[in-house]
Length: 268
Image 1 (cartoon, rainbow, N blue to C red):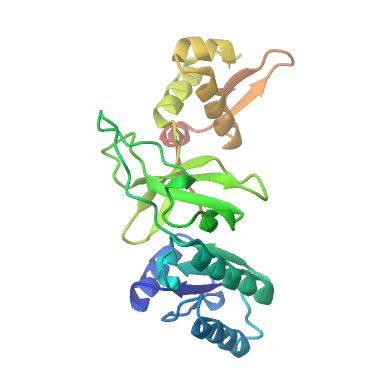
Image 2 (cartoon, rainbow, N blue to C red):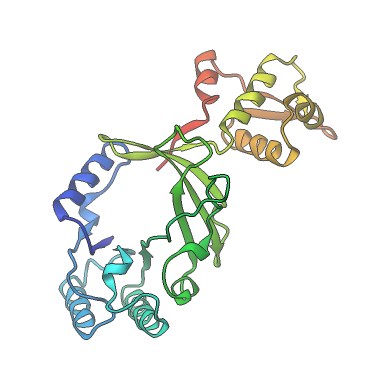
């Protein structure tokens, strides 16, 4: 992986990777941090990239990260012709390195409604020309989790634009810091998960069907199906029955079940 930082200090980046490595194993020999002072859509930028590729013919990357986008472009990122020229350079990199390119970018300032609640964000909230989003395969957005104001370290990761594959729709993350530095995945419906787990924990051996779960939990069927699918993927519940499916807890130790009801598990 080649990492092109266009802002910040290299030593700070190295320190973050070291702290990340304590939770998410990294092979630092495959990571090259290349401080960048050139703009990618200029003659100097193309010449610099050509030189970097010539110097590392045996170490061409599978992934290139350009962080952050606004510092990598000369001119206004709101002008279509400038962004088209930048996109041309990125495609040139992809062809010459046979790699994927990840661009990090900023969204516009979040807006609130008349009740003080934040409007739902989408790909359209990214700042700049529409050709930025038109040229990519996937758009991931990482924004603050606003449903629980006390959870200041929580974020919502979404992928609304998915052009080449079905990636994710949304997932809730929690940043753990300072050392180690990494995210853990948290259920988007943590409170509802706990309600379902408590119902299944106290039910008789045959379990509960979806109709009973919906009635006793008072959770909407759409969210309930998401929770059941989530719990099944995590091997926390199983289902039995040929026609009517009955859900019940997997056989875990009590301390495991208590931990799982928090809806948190480590992810890389």
